[in-house]
Length: 420
Image 1 (spheres, rainbow, N blue to C red):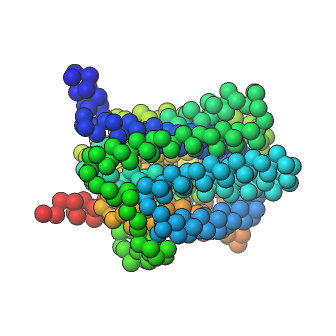
Image 2 (cartoon, helix red, strand yellow):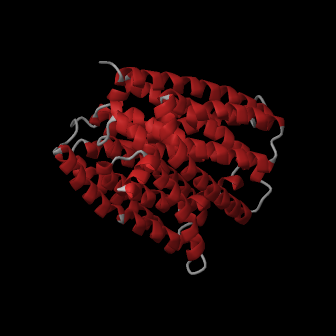
Image 3 (cartoon, rainbow, N blue to C red):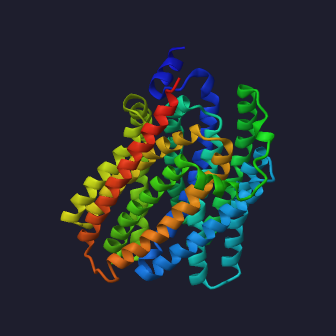
């Protein structure tokens, strides 16, 4: 009993929530590990491409993302939720197997590298969007504030396990063979989904997972246009993507003089540090910030801190300072902002969670990538020819807007939550 009380005090998870929370934790752990196995390889590629080529690659990624969410919405209109979620992960598993086969058959490695970059970028958002759609439908607003931060630490542990697994495997297999590991890992979530379906059904005494969504495959897009809250979340994602692009460009510029091997090793180390810090913040800070200071603070804390970091970087954009602040920004986003953002979806219906949410998380995000990368190309290589410090100052202004929107979304959510 004392052990249970200790665990509850640390995590704020109640006894009847422990089983589903730990299964959800393991679920996202496997998903993130499967992605982090290939992420350092993907991130090492763009420094060889240049701004224009990178902008084109992000454009292709946006197109692929839009097609992917459209296909997902089509199946979501025709397949029960109980089958939709596992189907998505089986599909991604088979897609990585197909890329592996293409490498093995000797197709052009440069072209395949860009295909790999594009598809991995789609996967990096899609798999977590499907996960959080599934999880948020089974939790109330109050539960989300307490539990989502802890669940999200599973992603951080997966982010540590993935690169470590690569280190162990890279000595005994070729780089392309790692795609097989990612493909196999995605199949491991299927029994977890089965157990969660059973436990959630027992707790809720509901057959929602068997039901189908609106048969209109475009209903997710229609709801996005007509729903103010969803438009607000889409705007939040758009501004978040902008800030990520400013940091990404800064990181790419300062790493241009390093070899691809050095970049991969350095970025892998930064991911490890980021995920350790995210775990600590996720366990000890995330849920307490949301409950004590409110969702507005949880959504705006990192954006306002990011604005300050960008202004600091503009004064001295040294390589290790940029990378260190990138770690702080990512850790804050993963541990505090991301769980708080997912709490917003506890206040919408299942249609929005399963059909509109992927549109926002994947298509809107990648569309924002395209928009911002071309804006940055215009600011840098284009007409304005701004220096890196000047671009970082512009980014600070974007971060302030991001934070203000977070305050607004958090207040609207809590006003609805506490209305009698």
